[in-house]
Length: 335
Image (cartoon, rainbow, N blue to C red; front, top):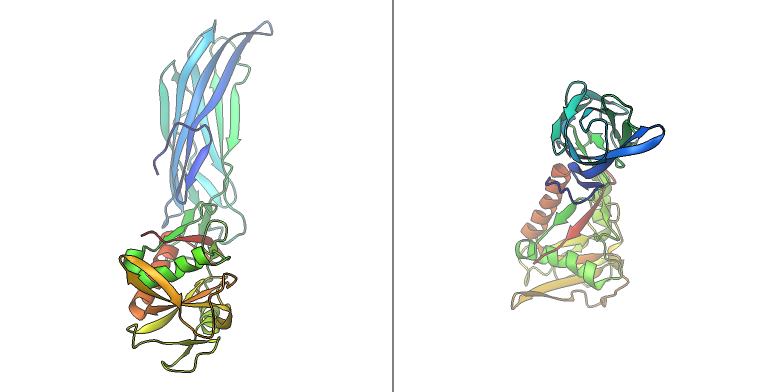
């Protein structure tokens, strides 16, 4: 994750967070009146691992500026990190004790976290927290301590792949299926997103993973009632067109492996596609069912190898992004 110092708040991706420049203001008093002040900036970079239960966070504190008549413009700074639930600190401080910090200087170092037991699913996440203590020789700063917590929680699970790992679960993974690679399959998903009043897989209407294999099969059987080529077309039947589409198969969207899947095929749009001058053109595939914008699903006539390849890409996303049961994800179809 590439961090920016432009923001004073946290920024995130699925496997990391950055704190830009959090201001720490210090004021010195004499006889109850302020005589000077100093500004410190705290920044951090935390990187999670999809296959580990421990992670590091780099902490930096920069002495930006001071003004007024401070007794001394050098401070002594200590930093401590913490975490809750099953998380413990392997290294709680990026340096030992209080270190001297002069104007324009920066202190930096790593803290390290370790989780003994994954907090799987939606049972609550891990919160990281921080505390700075500032000393000033010869006086007492008005604000010698500053404390805060990361506003987003970390989830560590053992529900994906053979090893546990950690993510920021509020960051929604994105499944990218280019038309140039996934052809009729990607065209089917894009058709549902652009033509229908139910643009599933978008930011406003994400899909959610369904991990149960029996439930996936039930969804698939409900949506794709497949008949042999040449069967009489009825609303519920998906009739293969192998004479026109080699190895024609029913590719359902939303996916059978999603919570949103499983709509009866009778209520899906049936579409087929033709590549014309580099553009996929859709057409009504079932003569008994005019295309409807109200349809909550689409059944595409898709060559089996393309259908299978798109499904495998979803499986890779699940592993790479630790998408657990009922996790949300979006689907984007670029050219």
